[in-house]
Length: 268
Ligand SMILES: Nc1ncnc2c1ncn2[C@@H]1O[C@H](COP(=O)(O)OP(=O)(O)OP(=O)(O)O)[C@@H](O)[C@H]1O
Ligand SMILES: Cc1ncsc1CCO
Ligand SMILES: [Mg+2]
Image (cartoon, rainbow, N blue to C red; front, side, top):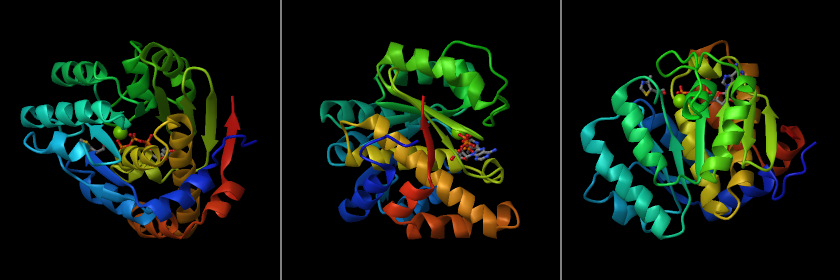
């Protein structure tokens, strides 16, 4: 049963009235779909990452999201400036540690970003297990592990870091180290469409911008919206190619009351 307040639907309705500005430092693969996801949901995305402006921009964005998917050296200073400015302004920032286990470069940059204390970490099960110091079966940017295998790592990470951790996959799991929730829904088509997880990370930032003091509730709202929109889009799609258009339409159409009626959230 959903006992989360504010509810995902309440937060979604607030999104449509407040149109939060979200600074998304995301990868080249994700930039377009992530911006469309945020626009559909009612937020205002800005893909601003250059070292010369990332910190300044974070001063007036409602939240920052940082994704290392297509990392290269010249991105790093902008990422750090944005995270530091978010922290200085009391704004939430979200880390998506894409395939951080894959190379020494990614591991090093991820540990430097972790030291800047993300408010929320969102990853697939393999990424969260490896971040907690465990072995995972990640395959490049794709997960090779079920969400259930990452729950203990997520809990430990949330407690050690004092942040919210979200693990996504067939089922999603969110914890702040004290409270936890599981979200059902979505579709097996979703991991076959690139960068939906990266887009979800940006959407988590949008919800966090609305309720900076309630990152646990904000994260659940983003995951619940994806779960319901994904399930409904899959019902009219015939595969990955025809999934994206109805998915964006559902993100734009679904009202808060419908999300609250359809979301399958259990607190753990
Ligand atoms: N088998 C599945 N069934 C239902 N929903 C799924 C499934 N796999 C993933 N999802 C959903 O897809 C969305 C993206 O999560 P996923 O775990 O695939 O992210 P990711 O691996 O980081 O993706 P990417 O790196 O491609 O951006 C989430 O909303 C998640 O719930
Ligand atoms: C395919 C891919 N490669 C680097 S980032 C990315 C998007 C999914 O994470
Ligand atoms: Mg990912």
